[in-house]
Amino acid sequence: MYHVTVLGAGTWGTALSILLCKNGHKVTLWSALEKEVEALKENRDTIPNLPEAKLQPEVVVTGDLENALTDSELVVFAVASPYVRKVAQLARTYIRSSQIVVNVGKGIESDTLETLTNVIQDELPEADVAVLSGPSHAEEVSRGIPTTCVVGAKTRKTASFIQDIFMSEFFRVYTNPDINGVELGGSIKNVIALAAGVADGLGFGDNTKAALMTRGIAEIMRLGIAMGCKAETFAGLSGIGDLIVTCTSNHSRNRNAGYLIGKGYTPDEAMKEVNQVVEGVFCAKAALALSKKYHVQMPIVEQVNLVLFEGKDPRTAVSDLLLRDKTTENSSLKW
Image 1: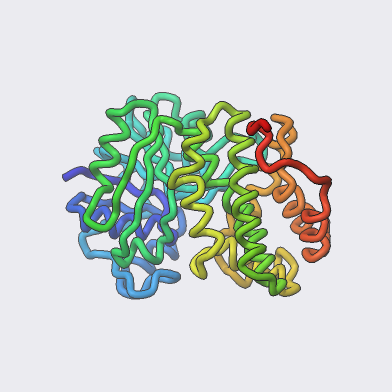
Image 2: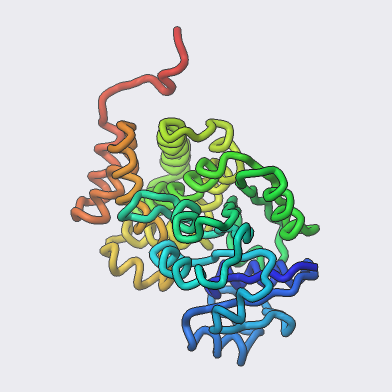
């Protein structure tokens, strides 16, 4: 049994706390929001956005960061992307040298274009920072529905440590040394999921969504390889696996926000209606900036940005994608 601290009591942090407690670990769940802490303490059987889930009485819920991190053997960052750096700064005083930290959030910091794992490492330079990602909706993990994820870490030892803590009969964990690839796939797929949702909202069919998903993973892979990541990673759980579930599931806040935009909502109206952090909206500008920095073509990401931030009509955006200049499917394949 290990002492695991989960930072962030949103749906994902709470779902992982339930999982880790079932695995027999001592779990402390921290939130910076006093109302969130009190709500979880008072009612563990009715958790917002986690139907049928129950937070075990053994899970300690607190707003005291020092208390949460004292003697912790694994720190789980389940923090929405805009707040990761701030939380890491607050935690710095209480993080010991070589502390193992695993990021489970998905996103790219808009100002620095850094992955969340790199943001945490920047603020906690003496920590051993890893990432856990994959097709894993919190709603299903909290109910014990079979799920698989992948851990990206600097060393096999760290990856195996995290793997052992999270593994259960319904939560299978693989390992991968390509940290940036694992994180990049899990982040940018949210932008593609917005596009898939828009297509659904416009009334397009399975053909359209399959095209967006297939060409979307091609865009992510091109960028990843340009950034030094491994192509194999994007064919795995944090790449195509996470893309599939996020583009197709009704649990997906990114797909649902896109659907509303396709139905005529403005991006702001769609995010308010979803009433959760829509990471793809925050990631879209960063993904486009990375494509320009590394001279990689990402037409789907480009059109999503035009719809989100410049008021482009979604139907016109789809037409523009289809009417681009003719090209080959894969430039690395030779006649």
